[in-house]
Length: 108
Image 1 (cartoon, rainbow, N blue to C red):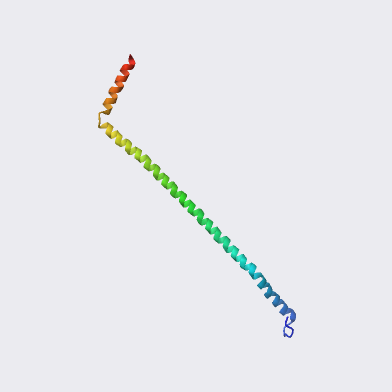
Image 2 (cartoon, one colour):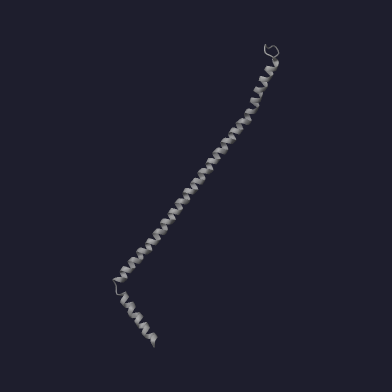
């Protein structure tokens, strides 16, 4: 405390102690703000990671669905092509005569 002052000594002591308290608390307040900012940015990082995972899962499911659709359409087209080739050939007649011959040998 400064001795020759026109203000009461208790007032100057109070102001000095308040200033010292502010200076003493400032590192803790600063670190608190840093930790709060770190926690917030980490939370946003995890939110973005979860959103990216969800989007990738949706894309993988869509790709799987497209692959299954293509597999089913290939079989359908292959079956239609094979059916049209068989329908235009003499294979049904040959198969029918083979079945008839097998039935005839079975009867004996």
